[in-house]
Length: 199
Image 1 (tube, rainbow, N blue to C red):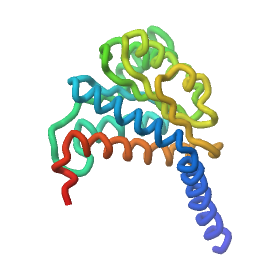
Image 2: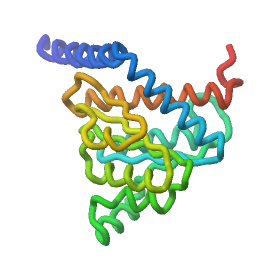
Image 3: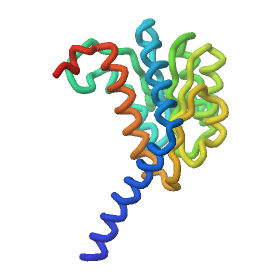
Image 4: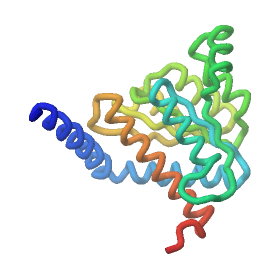
């Protein structure tokens, strides 16, 4: 029993250490503020937020999209956000063009100049995420990378890179990714719907 308790405590201590390391570098909050500003500008102009990632990062991309199109905390009008996660689209594109194109083809189909792409990769090396970023930039979209392990190739291609420090495993990185997502959504909502944050 004590071994299990130690393991559980260590998990939370590792998570806390990662969060502390993130907050200790002021550049991370500045990058989050830039992400929030870009999302706000996109939505204010009637644009759309797109998001993509693989595996658990796809789940985070879907979570990101539904918070905008559904609701975050209180009721308000829906906002345009799409996760590039339709299994029919993915299997069609993978079959016809290769797995590397599963997100970039959808960006080219749905993205427009002035839209924003959130590209999520715990390694920063996902070829299909990198291809999506390149397609988005060619369309004149803003790009944000939510990354880990130094940021990888994706960090060098996005307009705004938010890289989780210290963590070496996907689970620790993803924990902070979802915190960043929630914090940015709240920051944007506070500007778009201040009435939801009175009191």
